[in-house]
Amino acid sequence: MHFVRNAWYVAGWAKEFDHELRHAKILGEDLVMFRASNGEVAVLHDRCPHKHLPLSKGRLIGDQIECGYHGSVFGADGKCTRVPGQPRVPPSACVRAFPVHERHDIVWVWMGDPEKVDPDDVFDLDQLGDPEWDAHQGDALYIESNYLNVAENLIDPAHVTFVHPTTLGSDAHSEVPVRCDASADPIYTWRWIRNAPPNPFFQNYADFKGNVDRWQYLYLYLPSTAVIDFGSADAKPGSTEDRRDEGIRLFAVHLLTPVSERETIDRWMHIRNTHVGDEAVARVVDEMFRTAFAEDKIVLEAIQLEEEKPGAEPTLQLAIDQGSIAYRARIKELAEAELARH
Ligand SMILES: [Fe+2]
Image (cartoon, rainbow, N blue to C red; front, side, top):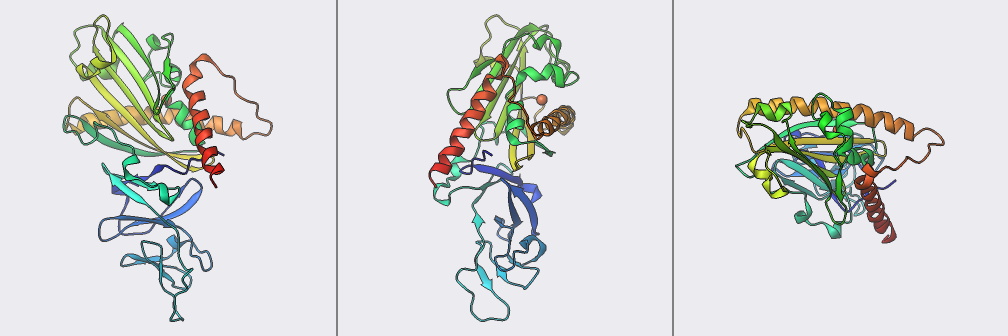
């Protein structure tokens, strides 16, 4: 299984954290998390070193966790500060604490080598925090499928016509070739549909004079963040990518957290350059994406079950799979390089 450990993964939206213990599993590891009184989120391995009761079954006392079995107490840094019944705390009594970084109302956790941690590596986007753009957090969608399946779906415009006929897709898409650049991080695929009628969503929020040029750019940042840039602008011969800000532009951002080998949480949000500050529009976008991503979930969970059947055969590779083939190869390289260093 290819988990890339030296990476920041989303532990949750900032609003998910409070001064109470919360369990989560990331990369197959059980974690206990809470927001301390100084505002910072602490993330620890969810297991008391004494008898291995998950610490999330204990309780918070101030900013420390008291184990629910024999009352040992651990600070946010993982160090044991008290063992009831003995005056001395053994130096080996500690729990692994994971580095945390919070930015743009998202809490990230570093699951890898503590020596390599760098908050500058946390995923960011120029439009996040820009007042000209409206960023809105959607859901934490639980998908019973390996994160590689989920990520490759997000760099794959070719499924849109068939999986999302009522929301994101249209027949005009299906025969337009998909292009791909897999030479760097992010890997991205894109296509332009030129001089075509706007799709209903974009028509509702803009005053297009007639046909539009539509684009979809799908960026996949390693290991598991996808940004899908959709938009439309009045049709004009020779439109290029630098024209995208002239039109209506909507990003769907998917922050994938691998839970286990067969489960993923897709925290999705959207960012738009139209109707900034209009909550009603944000809710319309939420509903459109919620419908579409539920359609992906059905496909991805069915694929996972097929993959787990004994004797599953390798999948067929088609021209539309360039992005996903490159992505899987890069993840494999990164994960293997980490293993080789150990
Ligand atoms: Fe989809």
